[in-house]
Length: 176
Image 1 (tube, rainbow, N blue to C red):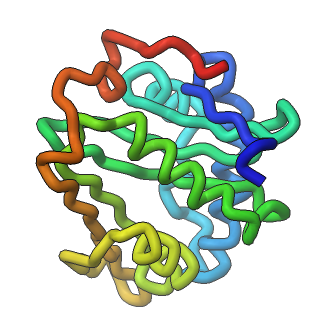
Image 2 (cartoon, helix red, strand yellow; image 1 turned 90 degrees about the horizontal axis):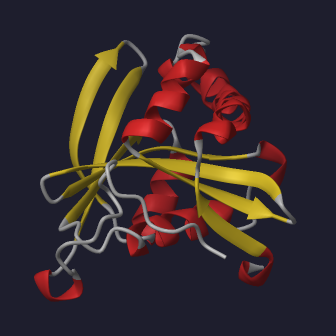
């Protein structure tokens, strides 16, 4: 499975496709929370473009086609992860797991990774726990929705300083 997946840093020309994927992926969450106004569903395409320009967006390609994506932004030694999305018809094939593992590998300078999801999002919570994330805070948003904040702390010996991965000003070379 991993051999037919390629991971690349997203470029500005990917914004439209990643935005469409995000909307498709979060429709499932909208049904779960009975809320079609979740931020990933209502934010404009320009927000996806901004995430590509100012942060780090990793895309997964299978057979040359977009299969999934995830965002990250470094702040100090914390890598804030968000918008992990996989096409719904590709769920259960390990793409989300591979995206998270690849994202973590591309951010060796991170001492901690943080991500959040809704409290009813059992699949996402299970995935993050499987990857070593632990809940550290729950924040009520409204009736029927609380956000679960999860973190993964890296041992200092397993990170290296000076990686440009999270820096918007220095981009690593694209993956082959």
